[in-house]
Image (cartoon, rainbow, N blue to C red; front, top):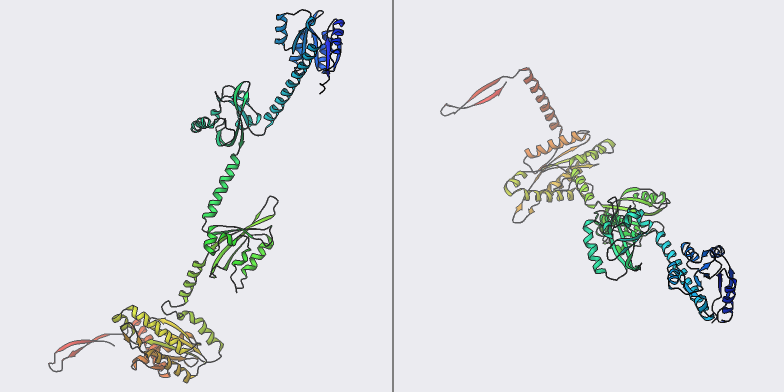
Length: 596
């Protein structure tokens, strides 16, 4: 293998010495050399700075100058990778030591060298210079990488824990000056007091391991805290055992992670069902559901994810609210609706849905979030309250007030007579008093069912109060009304079999008809009640129709009542006492009070 060609500059004030050196190398064919000659130190300096040669052979004495100055200049100007070999006419240990101390690559005595020795010295000097240059370039590259590393980095002494060097990112991140950090500060000084003991224990157990060392909490100069992922490597620096540390500031990432974790926990623990769909995927599939969704619908997350939300729609219903949802999806806006959905087992449930779009940084809708509240129980309670407000909870019959509107419409349309039956259960209070309200309530429930059966599908029966019921029929003539009343009375009269008892109840039924008995609901009610009262006076378990005589009697009573009130107001009444006598003994046994 042919050795590399070396360019050699000889700096010697005696050209004869240059020629001798050239001849010595010419007789050494295994190495190719090119020699050039300059006679003065100034010429040598100029060529050194030009950097066109691999090795410099410099005479110790250059007329008035000293060749050692060229060696010192090469070192001072960073040209150590251009080696200088000192030449002298006489060997001297002092000059040898001076040359090596100044930085010369070698020291040769002119009279003691031959071609092989000279070639070897030149070759070794050039090789050492090349290695030194490569090492220096490597140091420069690593220094550049260290200083320009965007992650805070530092080197510390393993024994003292003091900072040896730090980069610009470390200075910027931690707020300390470079000189401040390297003037006696240790790696413990950027920790919180409570974290320093953990650091010491970790360093003792870490040993010679390298790589990721975990996440640590550090403290900046202003006292604020940061979290850093730490990576460490062992190295030797200027003969000292050190460690290189690279810190990745994850404070913002950790805070974001904590917020996301908090948000996840809030969503997971929410009592409301939360659904997220992917607006960019075909058919907008579900990509997330929380546990409340699973509990509300009966579907697991695995069963729901990947499907469109329409599988929750209750079959067989035409809900206009779904049009609102479709319009909100089309227009990419919020919507707020109440839907009837179905659970996995097919049971319906009422769902209050709030749907909102989620946009990316470019304003494009990428997801929809649906928040669902189960209103089934609330809807049931509201329905019960609405039913209770218009129906009797014991019998399930509508209250009379709920029938008044329908009665008014019947009377207003004039399409035919309207018949009202006023039904009172005879002596029902005795059942409550003797057998208790539970038996009484059960008996009323049975009687209500019987009367509804007697009235048929077209019958309208309502509970008026207590043991009194009212029904209204449209279009019956007088014989039909009487027959219907008799049918109701007969069903009430059937015995009621209970747990250890048997009841025999009867009903008194009064009938009023429009238009002959009145043309308002109030007129018909008053006159049907009057007819029922007459049926009771006639012995109960009777059907009575309101008559003209009853009408006159009612009118007379109303007139008499009005006259009496006026008489009281004018002081026209006087009080008298009339004695009551025992006929046998003629003794007074009492008095009657009479108003005249």
